[in-house]
Length: 132
Image (cartoon, rainbow, N blue to C red; front, side, top):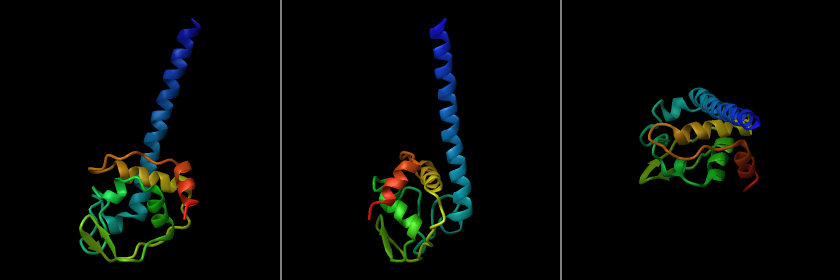
């Protein structure tokens, strides 16, 4: 009898964890739509020669999370080369975003469109933010 209760409890807790992760992607999409969509477009394709694409971009699905966090928090004003193309528009800094917001945005971007990268946690964002 106790095993059955434990099994049911584990099942329910797992369902809540899956729901919480899905909710983070929903929040990430909402933040993307209000903060990123104008420049990076609804399909993540960016604008040629101006705003870098996020869909299929090696930097987005790569392992350098600290770089992504830095770009979102501090912006980026240099011309950037990405996957053989150059983009010249500056990215606005977002110092008001909390670590959890950045994690949600990055998780949404890294799992949307054709991207199949891992999600990002607020702890990873915090650790990346402490790196120079």
